[in-house]
Length: 120
Image (cartoon, helix red, strand yellow):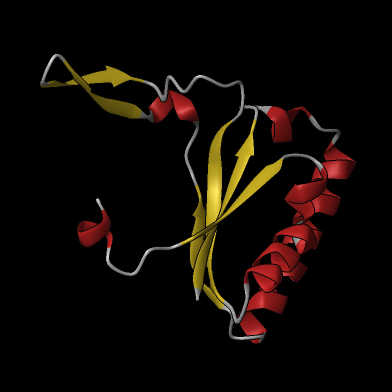
């Protein structure tokens, strides 16, 4: 089953870390990425640009309105994601725990629906 691992962090949180800690985390991220790629569980993923670059489209009074920024009702913003194909929800959570980001920020693990249109 496919899962998306959504990584949330405060904008600028990574940049605020001491350089030595950032370098160490980057080495851990590379090792983590290599591990899930070699296991065949990694489907895709990416870091996202800073929230300042976002646009939000939201319905208001039956009309779609576009605003600058993510404007989520939280301090943490979506910073990146992984898509994995694993045998169980427990394995998806195990992979999320293995991500170095899980020690600093939140990672939401959510199943991907195979047929989105039918369930909406």
